[in-house]
Image (cartoon, rainbow, N blue to C red; front, side):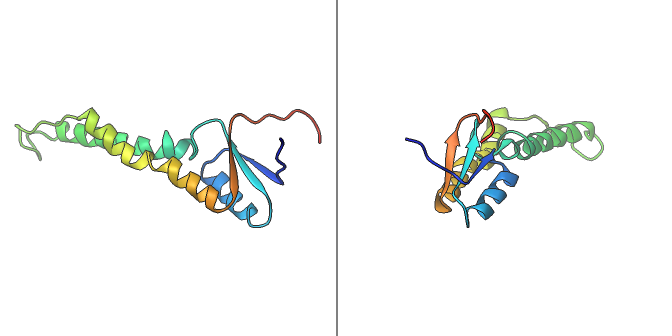
Amino acid sequence: MTTQFDILILGSGPAATRIAEQCAEKFKVAVIDSQQIGGTCALHGCNPKKVLVHAAELADWTRRSKGQLIADDSQARIDWSQLIAFKETFTKPVTPQKTKKFEKKNISIIQGTARFTGLQ
């Protein structure tokens, strides 16, 4: 059984989501993504990176400030398990929230890799 779509959108990041939502108002739309739904920025790139970088910067700043602004006996160390758990509070909800949003707007999700096979 084949399904016909008016528009196929590659990826599921912020730009793809915006276009899919606008197009779904008038057309039958599908989003194709080979990765987790949500996009690289929200799941692996920009947003989670900021959490990790800020924690590292804070630890570094605290170490360099010892004896000046920070008490000498303070320990600046990163608890990786807590940091990763904190990061996941931002990343884990992305896929279910975006999937629900697509379903609500009748946007189909295709997990896989798209390829062009010829002129249609």
